[in-house]
Image: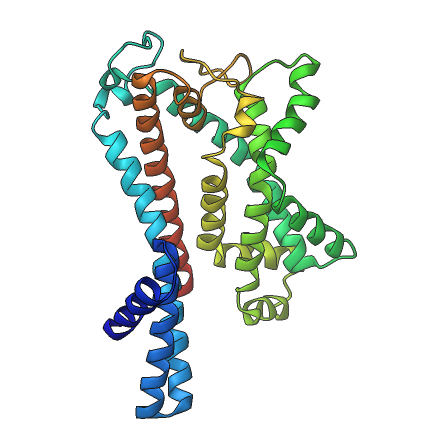
Length: 322
């Protein structure tokens, strides 16, 4: 690594007319892999050299993925933590003016709105997603291929399209802004994630369990309900958490459905309702104090998403350990 760094500095900065940190890192990585392969090849042979070089390349890619994530989390934490107070979780922003200090931010209305909207979306998406996954993995009927294509297509739907669909179907037709409309848009985005993950989990259930149940005379529906689903319980919970984490930070659908509010609205069926990503988006368009408040909303949202993903990983590890 030191040799490749010196070689890169010599070529990139002294001999060739190149500039820029990004190009320097790319040339450094390429020269490191080349020198590493050549060194291992001379010591242990070409087969081990290829294996070591691929391992090093995968490790470098993993580091390249983790670094931006760590920078984002660190930057959001640095910007938002200094303005985060306990009152954020106990008060609303109804009396917060643009010149109010950022430390006096109240986000209870956004937290309640996020929990209600995501909760309603879960009530809609979880039964549909798990039943669809059961159909795809257990029943395998004639419509399996079209349903699979439909689920794959829904996975690529932009979030703003889901918001526009609910806005066109409900909001402009007299339903008005509401947390329920936002939940419908979020459920459209959540459904394919839950379905795909649940399908994979159900396929991991050992076939011997199904065969043993059927051999004992149990019908297929009872085998699915009392053998397959209980065995995959932890994985299905993971699918639900991943679906929740997929939509909890969405902003575009909420702009056209929930609209946002600075006051508390616990009735998700009527009236504008706030949410953490929507509150952060609107605060970023205000004064300096509003921007500081937006970082607090963003920090709480990131913390919530991280908690969900950590929970999903732990449940997934427990499922595979069994």
